[in-house]
Structures are given as structure tokens and as C-alpha cells.
Image (cartoon, rainbow, N blue to C red; front, side, top):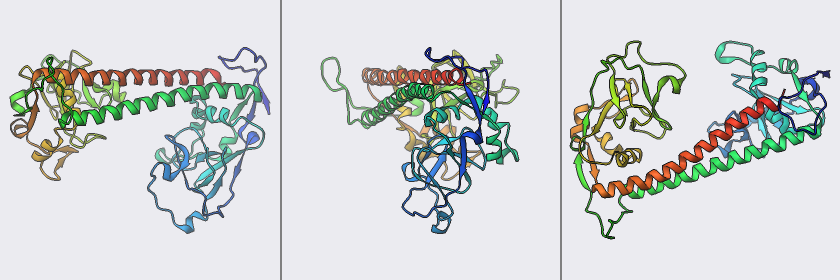
Length: 402
């Protein structure tokens, strides 16, 4: 044991005494019990899920009976380090199961509050300590029990460990509630959007009567292409994000991935749309997003840019594109199986001339847009609350531990 005169920045007022510190091997020991029970679930270990049975997350890796016999037994409350390609903090197991021998299983040697260390071992400060101990090449660095043992861990009284744990669990419960609420709203929006754009759900006019039938129009009848070059040397280089729409590259990637000279890029204004022809999650035929966050910005000429040329409602068509309603039309003109640097191979001329798009009466467009905007605003509000709570938790982790 090593005594220090260190106290956390943020602390419950009833606790005054200094925290004790122990080396890793004074609190945890490595366990290598081999598997002799074929009924135990195989655990998947990841930063996203922690240590959980593979069938709970549809983990698709086949394991032979022979290899399972060499697996290590994990008890509920054990901590697990990946020997290969170490990415971050140590994972805590809520389950009894087995895992690959390519993991270090750590089991407490003395009475501890498990969740206190579950939280502490994921703090930025501790991960930094572990990162300094990594061995190997850049993409295959490993951590060993020896180096884990050389890092001192805080060990306040069990009463204080529990107090900290209970408080952080409340924060986690709040995060879980907000996450669930956001997912439910997103599912509701997805379902209602599909009904609206398949016209299974229709709105009435102010007199309670049906609106006219939706018209099928060529893309070029509603939109005109934007090809304005960046002669003003605008340096707000944009990229398309599923969550944030058109957003500054530096803000999204934390670096610029554009060419040094962007004078040849397209200059777009607030309200213009940009179509990125590359596949991304949730967008099998690419994503179309309007510029909403900035007054102006520039995008690569690989994007197809356009704006509305008639009296159509831009918010309606933002939801229309987001629904994937246009995907079949894009697939119709895309060359089968052909991609260029990950981009769909399609003709810009055909995009405007051959794609059919539905156009409801402008008043119905406005009602649909208003209705879906309200759901989107609810989702945004919950997402803001979720991000604020996550930020609050990160701040707590940095101040409640030392």
C-alpha cells in the first residue's frame, strides 16, 4: 500500500480523510481458470458493450468446441483487459461466462465496491496511465498484467466508494432513460414518416377535405442544379454527417480532409441541398442534406448540389429525402455494381431528368413539414439533454477521482 496526501477535487462533505493508494497487483490478481462447462455463454468484449454474451449483440464469430475448451472462465464482477490491440479502459463483466485466452481476467483480492473501479478504470486519467505502458507496434499494442500492476489505484473507504458509485449509477440511469426516449422517438418518426410518404396517412385541408392527389414530377421540374464556384475563396469546407447534416469538416473530423485550394469547390448557401453519392450507415444510396447551420459553405464538386426553383416547401423535401423515398429512383439510374472511389456511378444529367419525385399540394407539404419538424425538435431536445448529461458525467469522473 502507498499512502498519499491526495484528495479528489469534488467530494461528498462527510468524507475528510486522505485516500489510500494501492498498486494494481495489491488489489487485483490474474485468473486463468480454464473452461470445463460448455453451457456458459461466450462473452464479447468491447468498449461499446463492455463484457456481454455474444448472442445479446449478434456477435458473428464462429468458435469451435476445441477452442472453447481453452477459454477462461469469467465471474460476474471480474475485470477484463484485452491483450491485443488495446483501445482504452478495462471492461467490467456483469455476467458469468467464458472468454478468449487473449484476455487478462482480473479478480479483486480484497473487498471493494466493484462499480467504483468500473468507473475509475474508464477515466481519462487512468487510460492515459495505461497508454503509457503499451508495448508493440502502433496497431497492435498490448498491455500486460505486469504493467497494470505498476499503476497505483485509489482506494478510499468502502463507504465512500459506495457513495460515489451510487451517485454515478444515478447519472448512468438518466443517460439510459434519455437514450431509450430518443430511440423511441426516432422509431416513431421513422414509422410515421413511412406512412406519410407511402400516402397511407394523409392530412386534411382547413375545411376537413382531402388534398389533391400527389403529382409525380421530374427532379428538374422542382429543383435546379447549383454549380457556383468558390470565387470568393470561402474556407468553410463542409461534409455530410448523418446526425449533423452539412457540417464544417474541421468540426466533424477534427481536421481538414479537403484540398489545400478550395476555389474550385461549389459554393452553396443556406437552404441549398447537397447530395453525397457515397454509401454510409442508413443511407444505402447516399445522403441528401440541406445547408442549415451556416449562411454559406463549400463542398467538393463530387457532390450534386441543388435548390428549389418553384414554391415547394424545403422542409418537406428535407423529410422526403431523409425517408429514403428517392432511393429506388437513384438505384434506377445508377450503373449496376459500379462505384468510383466509393461513390455511386451515376449521371448528373440523368439525376435531374430521369428521377421522378412526388409533389403534394403546397398546403399539404406545409402540414407534413410542420408535423415532422415538431417530432425532429423533440428528438433534438432529448439528444441535447443526453449530450449534456454525458458531458456532466465526464466532468464528474475527472473531479471525483484522483
